[in-house]
Image (cartoon, rainbow, N blue to C red; front, top):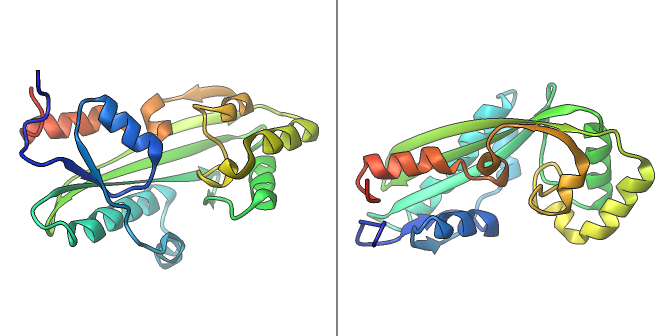
Length: 202
């Protein structure tokens, strides 16, 4: 049985290995071309925009940048933002920044917003933002250092300094929301869009 009905694979405008794995595991063929964007510059230009709006801007910018390089192809952009209260977090630049992020999030509930944008040529065909609420436990400073030692450079690979599919799960006491959204890809809404547009079997 072939699930994918289009003549060419979906283009993923992201270098995220977990996004690629999730899409391919769902039976969707992929070409991957990461967007060459200055994400921090886009965040600065967004000014006082909400974390939800920043995630939407980043996902759309990635999709449009790659769509310009792949005419006629369906391109998927995705991005995440993390907000705790009024503060918006980005990927940490180094171990010290990751330590400071995790210390700030410790014992708090934060929101993780994951945005998707599907673009073909100059048209945005689909946009979606999903939100998950995550509560970190009150861990000790000693645990925090042990966690940073264990995770190593991977602590810089995601907003919030954690991957819940790996050792990051030890940081949490409660998670409310969709697992795929936490991993960076609200898969069910994406599949719904692809079915509605005839890209996958319905």
